[in-house]
Each structure stands twice: as C-alpha cells, then as structure tokens.
Image (cartoon, rainbow, N blue to C red):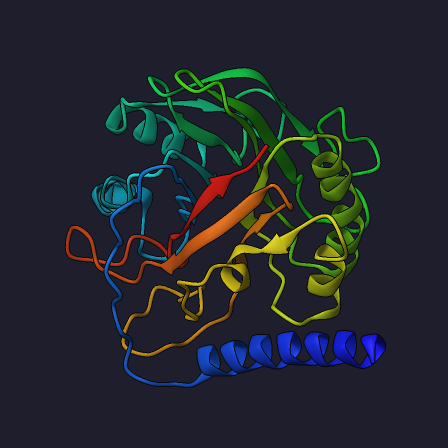
Length: 292
C-alpha cells in the first residue's frame, strides 16, 4: 500500500507540473498579473536576463529606464542578472543605489565580458563571502569547455541579515545554449548548492525547458523549482523574444531552492515599463521563507 501511495503521489505531482507546462504553451492573450505586496518575514528574490547591448534594435541605452523600473517595482531583497555587460553593470549601479553587487566579467575574471552578477540590499544584508567560478573543466580560472562557444560563469554570495542574523546563499548563473556544456555545468551548480547547510536559492537563465532531461537532472535531489513549490504561483513563458501580444517563447529562467527554503509566491512579470518590455526575458521573482 505504501508503494502505491508513493507512486500515486509522484504521478499527481508529475501531472500537475505537466498541466502547468501545457497551460504555459497555449497561445492566448497575455494577462498581466499584479506584482504582489511582499509579506513580512519573507525574502524576495528575482532573476532577470536583461539582454546584452548589441542585439537588434533593442539597445541597452534605450532600455535602462524599463529594466530599472521593473526592478524598482518588484523591489527584491536580492536579484541575479544575466547578459549584464559592463555597460549594464554601470547603469544598474548608478540607478539602483540601495543595492551592492558581486560578480566579475566572464571573459577575464575582472571587468570584461558579461556578468552573472548578484545585487542585494546593502542596508539590510552584509556579504560574509562571495565568489565566481567558470562552468568548465577549470572552474577557478576564466575558461570554457565542452564545445561551448563562450565563457560561462556562476556567481554566488552568502548574505546575512544585519538585524536577524539569518543567512542564505544566492547562486546565479547563465547556462550555455548547447546540450553538452549545459549537462556538464549541472554537477558544478549542484556541488556548490550542497556545500552549504543554510537556505540556498539558485537563480538563472538555464536555457533549459521544464520536463526536459537536463531539467530533470538539475532537480535530481538538492534543488526544487519554486514555481511548483509555491502555493501562489502561475505559469507563463519566461522568454518572450521582445514580443508581448501572445504567449510566445519558452520557459528558460528558473528559481531553484533547497529544502531549507519554503516558496510562498512565484510570479512572472509581464508588464511594460517606461513604455516597453524591458528585455527579451521577463523578470521572475519568488517570495520565500528561510528555515534554519
């Protein structure tokens, strides 16, 4: 009977996930759910691929107001960005003075190339430890492996609430688009998450669809998806290709958590800011409770 119960529980969980995924792929008019007020005792974490500067007609300088407006409206405790060029880092730092950041350029480990940086509220948190490693065979130095065309990095920071002393680890990354580099990057991420006996939140553009083999591998034990953990959730595709009239695109961006993080709310923010979509990815956030 116990085995039957376990099987049924897993089947229900799978079917629930499948229904949400199918719902997200239906082409229908886009609904803009409101940004929820943050409940006391929760931490709000955001992931946002801001799109690099030199793509098409949507140049960085024309979207600064929209990107900053989205972040200010969501008001996260911490947020991870992807495709953040040096120009983006300069703009974000200048326009979001309440936040401190950690991270390095992926090309040289200093200021060149895109950042997968993490920003956090500097008056609320201190950062006892932080770092960046490369998604490669030589993670301690700027590098790439496994047929990846570009260096890929993972940035992490341990954050400590200045008032309560509660700590959590925020990990942020941007996976390659090719299968083999993504597959070989997963153990590096999971190893980092498993090193800490504190709440762990992993944000990123994983270039990995829900229910795909690599997605299943990513959630093979250490981490779960806040989207499916949260009782207050939704299912809208996160990659919009800078289009807003239909639900067109894919779910590539995820907020993953370990067992010490209780997800309460998950949102994909589809609003226009400063008269436009901020990026070709929607910002997504989760409100979570941290447990010791």
